[in-house]
Structures are given as structure tokens and as C-alpha cells.
Image (cartoon, rainbow over all chains, first blue to last red; front, side, top):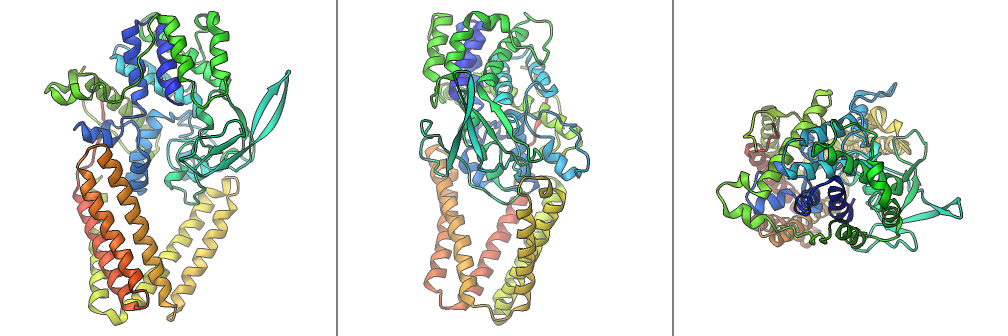
Length: 367
Length: 177
């Protein structure tokens, strides 16, 4: 997902869940900041590096892929962008070394999503924002894993868009090129993806790189052949998934606000969405590289105040200039990020999977 | 990094330093040593690839590619170990590619760090320039195989020292609340 969903759509969901404009801004800012909080940024503001929630492209190219480096990468990507669906998945006849990777495949409505949302209850708005980012990405990034893995994340080049016209579906071939600087050509179905890399732990084999940005575009429904699915094609229906992601965010934030007694997976606040369903569906299905303008307009209509543009540096001055860093906006974000990362990595480690390393438990100051 | 991993890094670094000293003090045997190292690397890579196939890649779409690669690498590794007269030019090309690639990555990383306004960029720039200089010297002296021995030794010392420094570096932990 991109800024359109993590920032503007999250703002809309927060408003629909009952938060004020200011609270919704804080939640959506924190949600989008997950895609910006790299070690490089944390170094610049002299903040703890273990709060990193993403990695810049060159940080990844520079990363070691020995076990320590892999654990560092997995902690970040599995915790914040590819939350595992089933840490105890079973596949007969597959050795543990394979299953350790297989069990990190991301998917929605998992026990870990439930823990993620429940963990944010009673915490800061920043914690809520981080949880919304993680939740939304379980829909967009499903069927890929947040660890470098050829056997899981590789795909063939055989991608096709499924186009619906007059009630019938047809397939339209998707082509790939390896040109990161060139924007995707959605009219001619030409997209950029990462190069094939035959090494199991190569950084190119992290997440959905081999499928390019297709999982990040809400309008596209496509089919492809993933490496792990026993030669069976998968259909990724982004419009449907994005609608569920939006509904689940509203339901989750209602729970965080105390309007719902518990958070259950498989519930999507359909009643809240119903009056706006056509409008939301139109935004999601509109063929465009980024839907920020449409979501921003919708957010403005919902709250009466258009959400401000995202500014990565907005809270950095406050953080750098005070001695009581934990009380700042970014201080809250950093604490929430470390707490979430610790929770996910602890679950992974306790499932017998060493790929995210172990978690050193200690009580940190409550915020 | 755990204590065992730190010890492993230090031990590997010391072994590399020892190897580099042998190469630099006995340049006449140095070339054979490089061939030996290349042979061992290719053989180990081949065995690893085969291990990867039998434990993981056989379950994936097009996984047989890993099997073919493993067999070929193992074959090349064994073949290289039996040769004593490989054109030395190829050893230099190998060194040039390794150092030039590492140098470019370091400099790109330095540019990114500079754009973000952090001090790391100077260290990365120096690292990148050193790598590119080594590559340039190899290109200039492409007809002099003794250069390969010298720079392979120097590169080994450089990598060994980096490993040892890395082993002593502080690494982050994740805390849980």
C-alpha cells in the first residue's frame, strides 16, 4: 500500500470510527510514518535504531544476509509490512528449514492481527496508527513473506490482469521491466519489478518485489503463479481486499475507542461503510497510480476539514529539541514501534522459528 | 549479535588475516593459493546450492534451476581445483568486478546518507573510493598477475579487519513492554 491508503484512507477510516479531525490526523500520520521510519532517519534525529519500521532501498543493498542481518530485515518487514498469517502452518513432507520461511507468509484475519490491534488498546494514537498500517498491509501484501526468500517470494513472469466488462471477465497480459526510475504504465499494463535473483536469501527476494507494485494498487485484480503454491495460480483481488481492509480498520478503531467490546477477525464494519459504499468503491476501482487526491477529498467531506499533506519532518524538530523525548509525538511513535516489533518477534520466536531472532524482555517505562 | 556470532566473526577475521599474510609473504605461491581459494568457494557454493535444492527449492516452481546450478558450481569448483594454469587475466577480472561493485554501492549509500544529513556519508565515501581505487589499479595492471596476488592479499586484510571491527560493534535489541 502507498500513501493514499496508509495516510488518507486511514484518516477517513478514523473519522468514520468516531475520532476527531486532530486525532485522525495523528493516527494517519503514524500509519504513514511506518513507511518512513528507517534507521537512516533515526540516526539523523539520534533516536534508538531498534525502532526502525522500514528500510531504505540502499540500506537493504548494504545489509548483510548472514543470520544476524536476516533477522534484522525480518524483524522489520515481518512485523510492520508482512504480518505472518499462520506461524504454526503444517505442510506434510516439508523440512523445518522450509517451513520456517513458509510460516512467515503474510495474510489477513490472523491471530497476530488480533494481537496487534489488542496490543494498541489503551495506548497512544501513534500505537493505533501503527496497528492500522500493519492491519492494512496484511490485505495488500498477502501471500508474500517479510523475509528474503526465493522459495516463497519468487514468481514466474506469467501475470495477467483480470478485467471485468459487461459481467464477463477476461485476462489481459501483464508485462514487467526492471527499470525502477520509470513509472508503471497502467494503460499498457507494463510494470516494474525486481530482478530474478537465484540466491535464497538475496534482498531482491524480499516481499512482493517480484510482483512489482501490483499489490499496492487498489484497482487491479490479477492472477499469478507464486513459487510456493504447488504450481497453482493465485488470484489477488485488490478491490475486494482493499474494501475489507478499510472496513476492518474502522471496526478495529471502534474497538480501540471502546465502542466495541472485543476485536474479532472477519468483521468489517459493513454498517458504517454502507452509506458510502459506492463512493469508496469508485475510489478503489479508479485506474490510477495513486489515489491520494480522491481519498483526501473524501476525508474532507467526512470531517469538514481536508487532511493536511504528509510532511515527514513535521515532528522531528520537537523530538530533537527536547530532553523529555518520550513525551513527544515521535517519542510515542518510537515506543509503540518497539513494543509492536517486540510482540511480533516474540510470537515468531516462541513458535520455534529463529528467523526474527529472540526478544530480550524487559519492562520499559510506560507511556 | 550473540557472543557466539561475535567469536565466529573474530575467528574468521583472524583466519583471513593469516591467509593474507601467507599470500603477501610468499607471492610465488600466492597465485596457486588464490586458485585454491576460488576452488573451495565454488565447491562450497555448489554444495550449498544442492542442499538448498533438496531442503527447499524442490518445493518451489522452477526449483530445478537450483539443482542445475548446484551441479554446475560443484563441477567448476572441482575442475578449478585440478588446474594450475588458468589464464591469470580472469582472476584479475574477478577482482575488478568485486571491488567496483562494492565501491559503487558504498558511494550510492554515501550519497543517500548525505542527503539525509548524517555523518556516516564520509566514512562510506572513503570506503567506496578505496574499493574503486583497488578496481582501477587492477585495470591498469591487468597484464601483471603479481598485482592480483598483492591486491587479493590487501583485500583479504581489509575484509578481515572489517569483520573484526564489526564483531565489536554494538548491535540493537528489541525490547518488549
